[in-house]
Amino acid sequence: AMEMLLTGEPIDAARAAAIGLVNRVVPAAELDRAVAALADAIAAKSPYVLAVGKEAFYRQAEMPLAEAYAYTAEVMTTNMLARDAAEGIDAFLEKRKPVWHGC
Image (tube, rainbow, N blue to C red; front, side):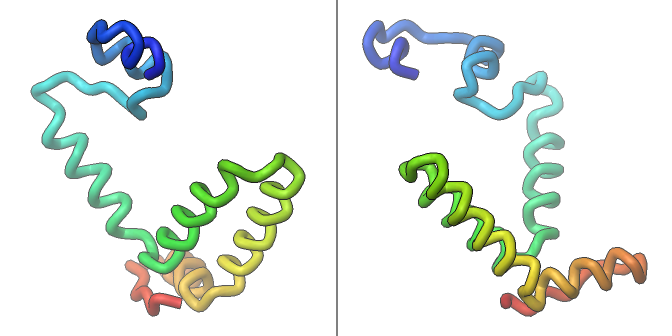
């Protein structure tokens, strides 16, 4: 990204993927299907757990390594004790879709 900023040179999708600028590259003909599949996969997860995880991801990024490990361990423990975690496990064992509670 810094190289792009400093040089102004465009890069192709393969290069963007190689340097971690994008998560994945798909052919144009498969783009809509890939986007829908990713959106469906995210939408199927607990909104509470997603929000907590997203916040933790960004908060720990600026922490020293030991502090980040301690913080994320605390967040993971809190997540595992959440009502939505139990619902996710129950739904999996009962082979049904989870009904998220938001906590």
